[in-house]
Length: 235
Ligand SMILES: [Zn+2]
Image (cartoon, rainbow, N blue to C red; front, side, top):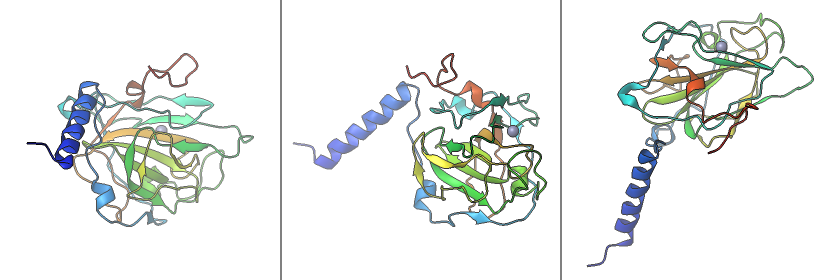
């Protein structure tokens, strides 16, 4: 008996998934945000708060995950800070770009994923120096985008420039796709990207104010190997 084309395709897909897991790169497992229609973004000038996120050293169930691209260029970086099991004192890592001569700094997806949440409507008083406009808008994250990578794993891209966000909820992205531009919205002291890697056991609600992850992890530990020049080295 010959297998149908459908069965052959199913066998091939299973083989690819198994190979992905064996090679340590998780298969993209969930299309929840692409399959459930939701508002493309949540726009408001509301200043809200969201619980400070708890630091973790590893993902639950020993999930393996790799960030494929550095999400932006920077003139300097500020490290993640947090002790596993406790509230993080810096819930992500910062990519600061303080050179006005570079007018636009793109922010890109760090890994393949689907847009889970987009917060817009947060103003900024200036691109450089301390933002004085609605600092707690977006719960301090300002304009921000959250990408879902499957298995409860997310990345967050915060403080984006007003009007710069190209991503909308449900969009599928690959590493390197442009999300928006680095800005100074929310609780920000100058133009920078605050980049978080997180885990959340429940889904984001597109129409609601800013939402926290259950856990945040140090992104620097999850990038593919970096070369001495700080650029991604592909093995
Ligand atoms: Zn930060």
